[in-house]
Image 1 (tube, rainbow, N blue to C red):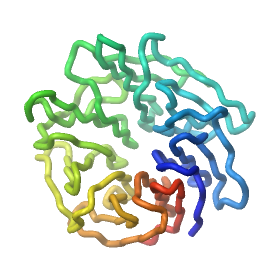
Image 2: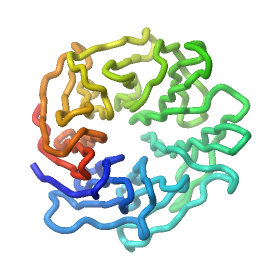
Image 3: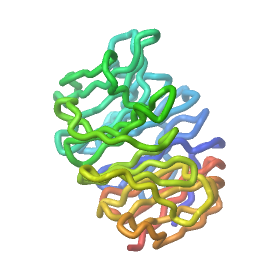
Image 4: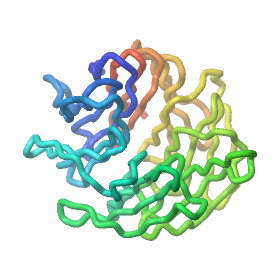
Length: 302
């Protein structure tokens, strides 16, 4: 187990590099940081001066470039040159809210907003060291992507939030290659957060307070309680697709079997209320960050 310091405020995002040999962390009012693992020295600060808030880390397939969002802009850090650049991937009148990378085609999915117009979802394909727009949906349709969840397949998930009632509150599974919706289902929840998709794109899980909502494509949405009364704040799938790491509004991370919905492991860390969790792509490591600006990395025994 290693205890790392990401800043003094709430940890807002965590992400492992594709090989599990590096960890990126974002903390309010601090520069995003990148550690080589196992951490033996100081981390690399990715942005100077730091932004108020950073989120939504992505890694290029070869892990050479780390991307994140700060101030409705995308930034990229080149690990080879040590340089950080701001990347404009949408028109100047659109702000960037969230991002996700879907493999194996490595499509970058963006959610943008244009003031007084609406939301768009854009799909970009890698083009050398740059990005090429492949498709755009919105703002004149119902696919606005309040929450994005990428998968290891050419599919991502979005949570669509209605305004006046449960009508329109739904989960959708669009194609990362075309933006076309492949499946959709209604969800009896007023507010779904923290979407995490199974690696093979077959299912997605989100939370509303202390309840989980699971949708396996082709089936009905399942509302699940795992025995804790603490509210969920972060979710991450294990690469085996069966286990889900959950960070609750306490100091305990819980590993949940998504077939039985039983908690099979509990890990209690002194890092404050957990606000971000991550599992390495090989399933060997887990990370959790909390309200004290601390991040704990540990071996995930399954």
